[in-house]
Image (cartoon, rainbow, N blue to C red; front, side, top):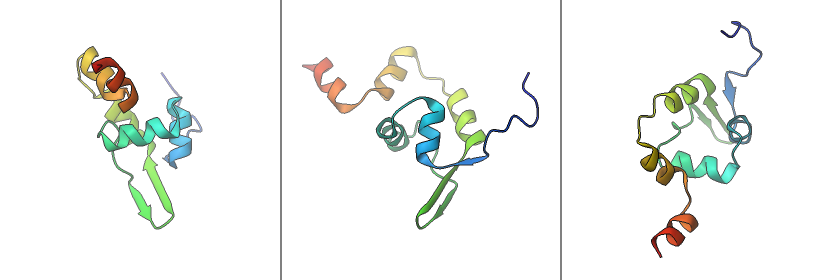
Length: 84
């Protein structure tokens, strides 16, 4: 069980979100386009932020099969090579 105040930010930018997920910013953008990650909750010009608890909830709620999940997370280069 985690403490109520675990010092995690509530709103994060895309670079921070990618780092917290241990993925590249490019993969974060791909997941965002595919709907694997919810859209930003704050979008005011150059200020774009994701509500981190919502991102976590979306990822926990994913119910894709293992193969569907793998296909969702791979990029176009990997799909092209797999389908060749």
